[in-house]
Length: 127
Image (cartoon, rainbow, N blue to C red; front, side, top):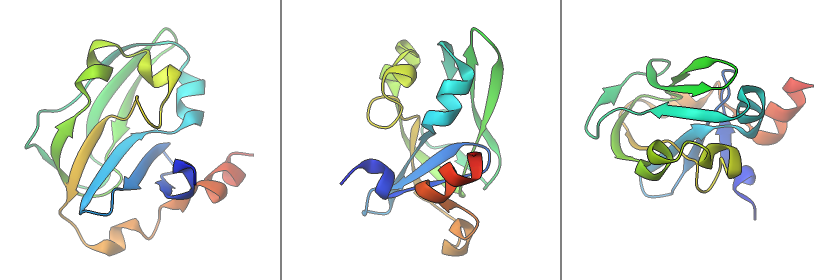
């Protein structure tokens, strides 16, 4: 089973992966990474910071543009991907496994996920 079978996506191109232990992995979709081009800088929040759904939690810069990244659900940051901060090109190489951004503990209602799309629906919406 690939990660894309368990991932939910936002209209703003973030993904949310349920680790089945109350912890979710948040990152950028493959489409977002392709659109950005070569990623050269990544700024992530500190562990312990809480964000509401839709709030900006990170910034990514590529050779083309700088973009804000939005939290797909309300959550508290429990881990950041230090490797991706040190080597932002990891997002270009493997956005799902190595280039994830943060891990969060959900703090909102489950209904916050109602407007997120399964990966196949997300891909269809891009066409």
